[in-house]
Amino acid sequence: MVAEAHAAPVIPCVSLDRRASGETRGTFYKDSPALIESRARMAFLGRSRREGAIDLLFLLPILVILGAFLVYPLIYGIVLSVHDTKGFDLTNFVGLDHYVHAIVGDAVFHRSLLNTFLFTGAAVVLLTGVGLSLAVLVAEVKRGRTFFRIVFFAPFVLASVAVGEVWKFLYAPFFGIAATVGSALGFHTLTIAPLADANTALWAIMVAFLWRFAGFIMVVYLAAIQGLPREYYEYAVLEGAGRFAQFRRITWPLLWPHTFTLVLLTTLGTLRIFDMVWVMTEGGPSHATETVATDVYVTAFRFLQVGYAQAMAMILLFLILLLALVEYRFFERRAEMVSS
Image (cartoon, helix red, strand yellow):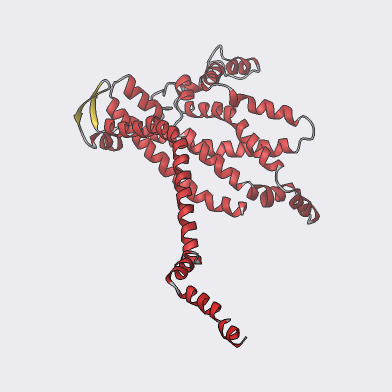
């Protein structure tokens, strides 16, 4: 029994020796937390790469379309703007001569730039004001709100060419509706032709432009107003605030995110206006309604100076990007403050 007692501890000694062996140490390091974490990270990275490759595969058709219809035309337009052209064929490289001539020596281009920015500024202010006013008024209507939505929004779905033709007929002297109705009411309007007068032609187009797009602005603002928390207005009523005070302190500040979006969209769309102006006046009379878009069209397709027309278009593109950036920096902070 003494021998058995002395022999019993031998087993744990052998076990300790095995734990100290290299095999046991290898097993320990193999199962260490650091190595497990490293393998998990590698597996995660492998999965991420595979998922990224799959995402890229799905995005590839869109990237091809963007490259074909956006990147390539932009690069080709830059190349075209620094060359003389014969028709649409490139001839001589002229560098920045087209840009210099447009900025310094082209009076028609200067007038078209002025008209474009005047029209854009007036459109942004008037569309925002008229659309918001209509939205506030319609929001107060208890019955027939859907009817007013349809009536004001209907012009927006019409084609610009159709709207231009209708308003061209309205403004026509002698047989136009405005001249006939005004004459029937006793006013001397039979010979008045707003589109033929250089002082009124641009603003006559502005009226038609407002008629078409004010309903869209109204619908956006109306949806936003209906989504505002009613608790603010209930608290304002308890404090004795009137309708105007409620609008100034609650409605208008909370609508800043929507105003930011609408101002940006209106600016980008109006700076490129072509169709309504071309249908109603073709840039006349005496370039009074000439915009950059109509000037580019005439230069390219009537005078066949495609390279020079492309240079004017690139200048307009640069100005659009610059103005959009300025508006974004100006409105974005206030919109974020309201959203947060």
